[in-house]
Length: 54
Image (cartoon, rainbow, N blue to C red; front, side, top):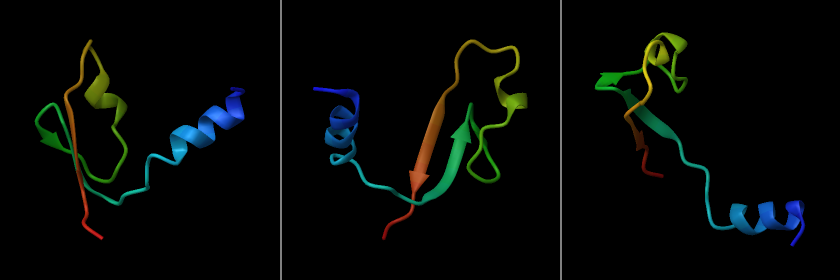
């Protein structure tokens, strides 16, 4: 299976969802981007993503 067909096969199993909020290391993020400040001097992130219902 070539790369494009593999991507399409994987893509068909997922759907886009709207993000309600993101929690990174116990702190709620503004927006949907994890800031570099939250990743500084750390080896591991704990991320929880809450989605909106359609």
